[in-house]
Image 1: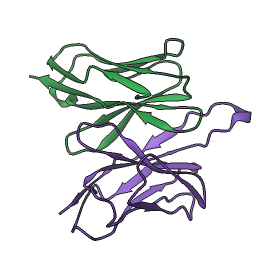
Image 2: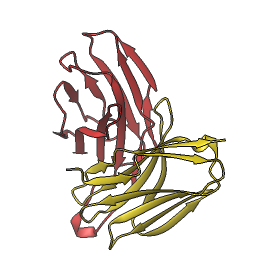
Image 3: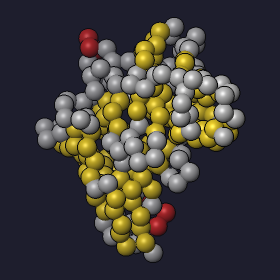
Image 4: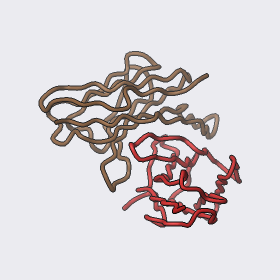
Length: 118
Length: 108
């Protein structure tokens, strides 16, 4: 079955360590996204990638890095420069919007990873 | 300014009640998603809509493109429905915007 997988569901790290969150999809989706959720707040965009080997900063990219070396994978690294890394992280993927062929609505969300830095 | 507005923010219902959660957005979209987030944080995709209505079990989602509004209905609510329900819209830029969620508690 096609889908999007985030792992692990829960992750604990010591302060000052970099940590990489995994997001893999086998849906042949061009676009992938990372979001962060803090208590009482909506999900906010960290980084997104519309195509392999290309990615763009979202609203809260500081302290994070990503790579998109393969279409199916979009790992997010939470660096030690991120001041408040403890949060819930959500990965999503979608078929890229192509104006010439009209709207395309397929998109999927991972289950999320809850990162706690102590 | 949030592109997506959800209401209510919090909702408490008695078991068996019919529940409605609303989502409004500001501009034209390519798709709207309803997500469910349980305590502990795991996200489950419930529906993806671009028009009309979808039903899955006790859950019904509707969307009115002209009014830029969607509703999620839960019939015969049950305590296991207690969760945060999140509306997410995808605009033509292929960006997602999320509502802040509706926290639902169903009391036995």
